[in-house]
Image (cartoon, rainbow, N blue to C red):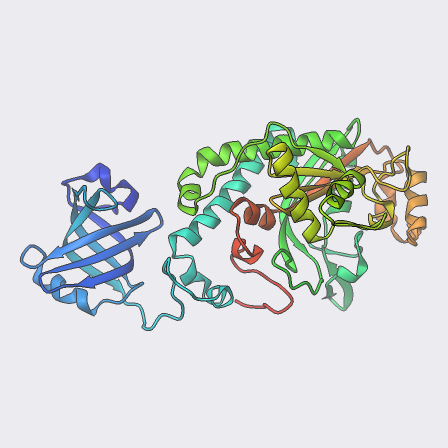
Length: 435
């Protein structure tokens, strides 16, 4: 007999089936024994009655341990008193793999094991269906974003993760010994995205690892994260990039409500889909925050407390969990961002905040070679030492812009998780090197 998944048992009522999975719970009584079995599709109560179940199986059940892998031959029956609405009457159990005891973590819904220890034994932690739901939602996010990019004429690219240059902050680079020569783990695919806008694809995206050598110990930072990066050519201005991102997130929330309905319900998550995402300049955002006593200097960026407070105020005023903040100071932004002609002290840039956290940063890029060189020099950089980058602007570069997202943060904020590490299977931070 072929294996039946737990989610399909209702279609097999009163029919003998074979079910395989992990033991989630066992309850032993003298004449009846209960097993809650779990597979990738869900969990279900299985019942063995003395006299109805094979004697060998009935005596085997008390020797089994939680998280053992078993095969059950039985019959699903309707039971309205069960929380599943059905249960499986056990005829026979075949032991496939006996779990050792005690388990190193408590992976039940009531478990109090710390996140660090759960990650140490992540393969056991992810057997919990709610933990699995986080990563099933994450997988669906990738699927939905990929479909959206493809539908909007973007080409997926794969760029090197070992590079000779960094375009953000040199202090954030991990050095690698590359056959006796220094290389660096990529902190951004920025140069390569622009390279292939110039290469004729016009619209490109990548979903891939990004590395930042920051000794950050916050609930939102990682040293290795999954970036969702996009770049689009022939734009009219930076607002066209924001329009695209707005459409993308509306599409993401809309499809998640359909494709991840089971997981979102299990995690108790609901979101209101915005019709439009409000847009505030950084100056306007600071003025709004000053009404709550939160003050900033002229060229100062928002801190995490300010982002959280701003999102709360925007939700009160506009009824949405999202807000764009635009026109960040030139002093705090990379040299390749385009300055505002009306006010060269600020850039045509933006951040997208969601549920109190910045999840996306983007801008219109400077495509004019002479201006690009001047801005690099203004930031203390030498264009002659960035030959491969500067060449992109010599042979026809269209006006373009783009953005970078953190897939981990998007998942964290969508699912209202306290720590970004909960949204990453095997996170890397300044201390964590394993598993």
